[in-house]
Length: 183
Image (cartoon, rainbow, N blue to C red; front, side, top):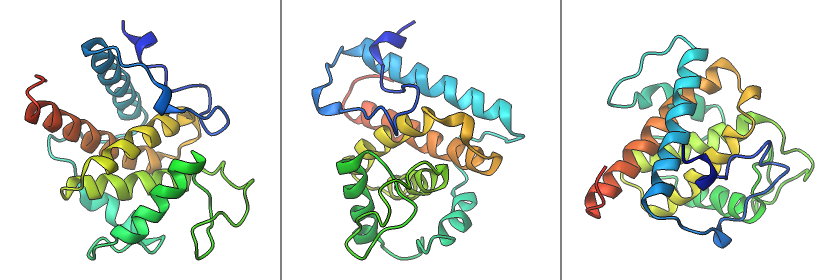
C-alpha cells in the first residue's frame, strides 16, 4: 500500500547505492511503508527456513556467527564496530577484508553476503544491549542493502536476519513509544 514511500530497497543496493541524506520524509505513511517492508521481509524469511519466531529475539544464535570474524560479544567492541560502521557509511558497501585503518583490501570484493549479515548482526546486538541512534541509523540502511539481494542469502544468514529484523523492529517500536508517536 505504501511501497512508493519506502523506495530504499532496490534491485541491488550494492550496485545502486542509496543516499539517504537527500530523502524526503512523508510522515506517518513513510513509517507505515517502512514497517510493511520489514514485515513482508520477515514473513519471506520465515517461509524460507524452519525458524520459530519469539517476542524476544534469541541473540544466542548470533554469538557464534560473530565469533567467526573475531567479534567478541562479551567485551565492548564499540571502537571496532564504529570503524566498520564508518566504512559502510562512506562506501555503502561491506567488504570481505580490511586493512588496519578499515579500508577495503580489495575494492571489488563487496558482493559476498556474509560480511553484510555479520555487520548487521553486530549492530543489532549493540542495539539489543542499549546502543544509541547511530547504530539504528546504520542498521536501517544496512538491512535495506541486505534485502536488496536477499535471494543470495544462505539459510543460516536468513536465520540470523530474522533476529536482526526482530531487533530492528523492536528498537524502532521502542523509539516510537518513547517519542509518543504511537506504534
